Image (cartoon, rainbow, N blue to C red; front, side, top):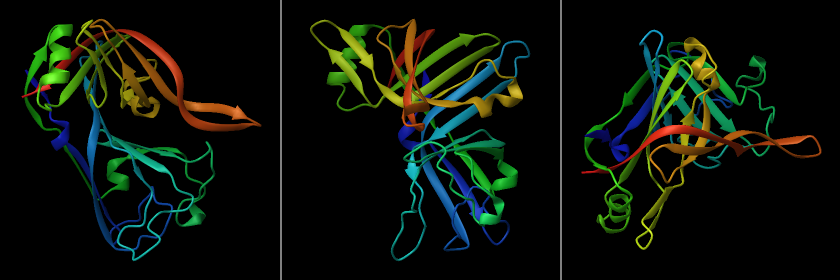
Length: 261
């Protein structure tokens, strides 16, 4: 079967500051051009069962807010985790500071305060976008014993998870690299603990899906259910919130584990 080769799958966005300012920036650009290539963490295909129309969203690996090409003081202060989610025509930039609702201004500051979840059209924000989802042959591991064996004895072959969720009007298929797998060769138990993956809000209309995408970690040890811990604003006392993985969700699912050939 075909599976995603996450070690060779990327999103690349391009900012040419001679053509347009960067709508997501919080600092003046040190140079006039930058291409950012980011490994993929998750590919999420969502199909509207009422119309048959599908959308593909990809989540890139988390990095940090930075000045590119400077001689010192690379890291922005205050600093944020920066995680991009893209479809072919829309984007969601997720920034995580030490506290939620940090209140960091855009650049230039006359543009006001930036949201920690910024949604927009690719054509309005970037000079180019390329989504490279590389697919290769994989071996479907159909039993717990085969998953345990592949985890412990495959000579380092990557494992990919594939989880299908049927909810309301949508079918969502998540594909993701399994970065942590627990395995017992005595009891033939396996369990994923990996992420972040994309978690859809199934209550939204198709044109609004990207607005409701959240980040989550996924765990399963069975082919027919999965549990997620979702990143949400989380109170920590004295009126302060942080963005933390604290919301627990369970779905009936179809789970597969694939060894990359």
